[in-house]
Length: 203
Ligand SMILES: *[C@@H]1O[C@H](CO)[C@@H](O)[C@H](O)[C@H]1NC(C)=O
Ligand SMILES: *[C@@H]1O[C@H](CO)[C@@H](O)[C@H](O)[C@H]1NC(C)=O
Ligand SMILES: CC(=O)N[C@H]1CO[C@H](CO)[C@@H](O)[C@@H]1O
Image 1: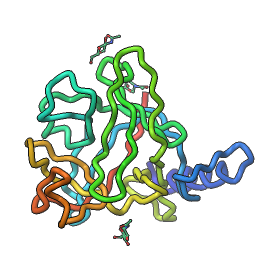
Image 2: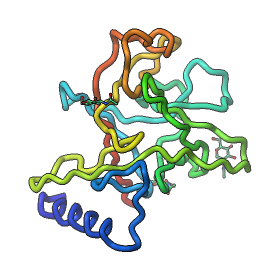
Image 3: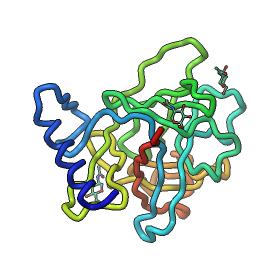
């Protein structure tokens, strides 16, 4: 997108928030929206923005089929559960490669929070936890990645990628805390701060 197109998109999004039909949820600040159709997620290192990893749901270390999965780098996952997502009123649903709904977002702890998903049995409907939000970049100069994932009230600044202590999966962890990292199941020394960007899938 050109910077102008990004500006127009941001303005339109801002205007739509001001309209009576816009829904503002407790999880979304003014520069965020609680809905986004079909997207994938990309982590970008804050220290070196050339380090970019597509994210997916996986559950390395758990027997398959498992009733849980969490967000990690696609390259580190033994068997990818889902790579396409939809955000609805702050809740994320995850879709497998054949397009079927396979996961719904769980709440995320305010410290050492894994971005975990529940994998319901087929045919069972469970609503996703409504804790996410898509922030849009408001810079007049535009941004390479105009949309960023945020949670727990619009916080997009505290995601890290860390290696799980029980497998080779690099998982996304919210608000890492060194003192309790061992109990939380990841290796503190492997963590790097990242932004998690929302990439719209164009049909
Ligand atoms: C899609 O794949 C899942 C397993 O990943 C399977 O349980 C389900 O039956 C499949 N659905 C269709 C429509 O093929
Ligand atoms: C998302 O887009 C992909 C690629 O076009 C498609 O295969 C998939 O079915 C779509 N999923 C949803 C939930 O719309
Ligand atoms: C809840 C929390 O710890 N938020 C932190 C997220 O990151 C920003 C910027 O690094 C901090 O200022 C916040 O305190």
